[in-house]
Length: 348
Ligand SMILES: [Mn+2]
Image 1 (cartoon, protein in one colour):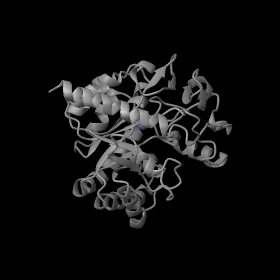
Image 2 (tube, rainbow, N blue to C red):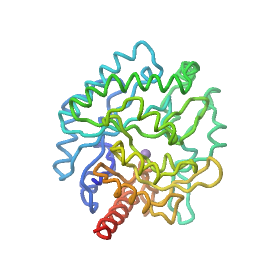
Image 3 (spheres, rainbow, N blue to C red):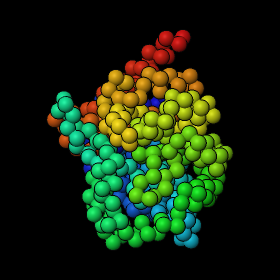
Image 4 (tube, protein in one colour):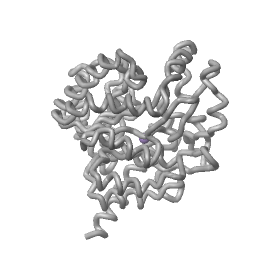
């Protein structure tokens, strides 16, 4: 298991120096952030991230994410041009030593939350999700004020994009995903870059948009779309865990044994009512997920891939990018590494 930490580049208030000071840290997870989806990343930008990381003795072997252009998800004729660009990015990243690319295939929005700054009893703050509140912000009426998304699209742009998805149901989305995978996996194989799809967050349909990376049956189907081991998963415990019908340790054991888990996002959430949840501190006692069982499942299936603490709360007066402060994620990393050491030593 290799411990990593997401870094948002030179504008991230969490510096590489701070990340390198977190005990047990092996590397960073990053991306080129100033290029629009569907464009080629410059070799200079890729090398710069790698060089910056190296200066702090951190590896740069995981990219999160290379965004998939909406035309690919929509299955439009123009997708071939965007797939060509995607393949070029895989080649460039592979040559730079990147081993895993995390991506998602969620239409229009990826993660959704109702509040990015919910104040907990102890004064820390968390991202939370309340289904009713999210649905009351129906973007089709132009009344979008989704935290984190309200400035990503213009009202008109969003309405027309949502219109384009009217003909795309989950079957069509699966077909478009297969088309994409079949095109890129040969390049991944040649350049030894593993693709790791991130589950949909939260793992159910929203605003009439299909979501397909949501549960065990759909993950089985996803993996069978292209049987190559280069077609794999980012197992995000908090995303899948928002649905209490998902048995996370069971899924980790199953897909881990198949060698299809390349990257793990380990975070905890507390389910509080149907389709409502709060993000919590990482330890098991605060959330609905048992982090020991999660790491034990990885250990038992011989996991050698990458893991990172996922969203943290804001604690100790820190402010910054919601979910991506330094302190609580650092505590998460060390907690996860502590469990791992205990499992390793007690298994000898
Ligand atoms: Mn995640």
